[in-house]
Length: 309
Image 1 (cartoon, rainbow, N blue to C red):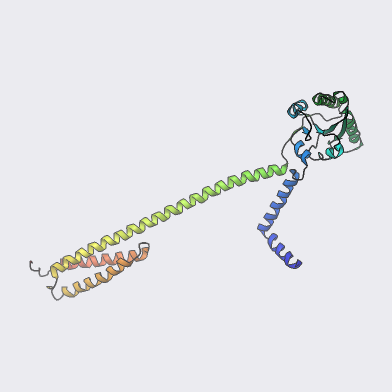
Image 2 (image 1 turned 90 degrees about the horizontal axis):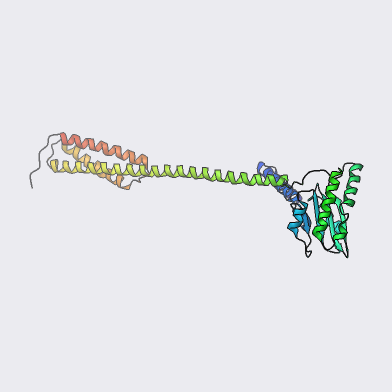
């Protein structure tokens, strides 16, 4: 069973198509993972916002976002008795490059937990992170009943940290991850390629339809020309019959009988031929022309006129 499965997988992914499918699956998995498919509600929110408000907590979120602005600051307002540390942990990738402050009301004061999401390369960066986390929430207990005012104090502390050089200066930029760019580009490329393919297929189909229509018109024209030539030959046969019927000379009579016999046989073929059988139509047309020339030659030979009826 294992060997059979191994052979099947080898046959599938060992080909060019299988390799392309595998690469697409890897890219899709990477895009889903880096795009936050496994994120919790907090991480999904702070990927594109600076404020998270837990269900049941009263806060004017648009006003809070305006207060924070484009600072590298993320504030999570949690419900009482929520695990602030666990909430902060959910922002590890989603709020990278920011200072995160988690707060919840605890009686007549705020329960706080800060976590720096700035890169820490050495002990100096670690010390800065400790200062950020302990300084960002100073003075907010005076505004337990006014969360927006408390948020203003938080932003003031943040600005002081920036002036002191503890927090890197600059605005927070929120942009899609690389896989999202790749998927967006692939989607756009797929749309363009699909549209181009449909246009090319439609153009090709139009050309084929036009060519088919032209061939059908040619078939009809060829069949009509053959019918007209056959009708003209029939009139020649009728004229010859009226002139020489039963009164031919010894030389003319066998030629006329042979001509009439050939015409009768040819007429059966003309009646049965298909219009799209170009080679047969062309051959019959040549035979009709040959018989028509023979009929013209017979008409030019002297004969005995038939008696008037």
